[in-house]
Length: 334
Image (cartoon, rainbow, N blue to C red; front, top):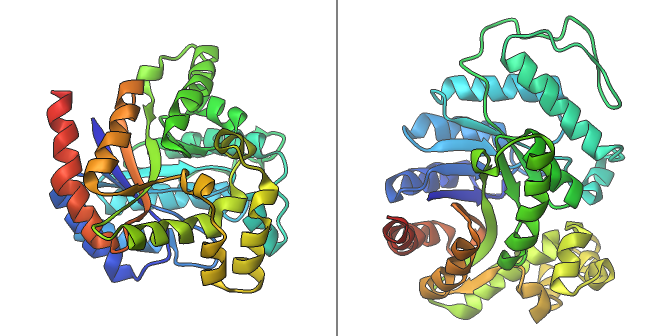
C-alpha cells in the first residue's frame, strides 16, 4: 500500500516544508503540490521541499501544456529530479478549461495536447530528439536536452473525463484520478483498464492513486467548513462524469461560482454548498475516514492519496493521518 499527500499551492512556502517533513516522518510516500493559476509556483515550492527532505517523493499535480510549454515542463521535470536525487514525479493533465479562460487560453484538443506532450517529454528525458508534427505540437530536430537527465521521470496523468482516464491506462506510469465521491473509483478504474487493455498493458503496472478530498478534525463543524471552501472554489470546474455521479449539474454551482469569483464573498459561497456537494469528500474523525477508505481498499485501491483541505488545521491533520490512518492500512495490507 502506498500513501500520498496532495496540496493546493495556496499556502506559505514554510508550511509546505514543515508538512513535507512531518509527512516523511509519518510514513507518506509522495508529496504532491498543485500549480493553479495566480497562486504560488509549484516548482519553486517543490524545490524548497526537495532540499528539506531525504526520502519522500515529490510531484506536480498538475501542470498543463497550455500555460507551460511542454519543453519547459520537461526542463522543470529533469531539474527537479536532479535536485531531489531522483525523487520527482511529473503530474500532467489538460488543466481546467474554466481557469484557462482567465488568461484567454482556449483548451483546444485536450486529449491530443496531453498525449503529444507526454510523448515528447518522455523522448526528451531519454536523451532523444523529439521531432513531432502532430495535432497540437510541431517540434523540430532541435528539440532535445542539452544535458543528460538523471533518468526518465515517471509521468502521472491527472484525469476526470473518460477519455483522459483511458489515456492513463494507455501511456502513463501512474494516474491521479479525482474520486468525487470516493466510491467513484469503481467507475474510474474501468476506464483506466480499457486504456491499458487497448495498449496491451497490465493495469498492475500503473500506479493509480485513489485521490480523495478529506477534512479530518475533532471539531466537525470546522472540518466541514474547510471542505466547503474547497468545493466552493473548485466545484464548478469538475467534470460532467463527477457531477453525474453526485446527482448534480453544472448549473447547481452557478450561484456558488458567482459568489466566490465575482462577489468575492467566500462566506456566502460556502453557505451555498449543499449536502449533496459535500459528498465530494470525507469529513469527520480518523475513524470515519478509515471506514470510508476501507471501502476503497475493498474495491482494489493500492495507493491512498489524501487531498485538500485535509482538515481545518492541515499540519495537524497530516500528523493525525500519519499516526492513526497509515498504520491501520499498513497492518491490514500485511
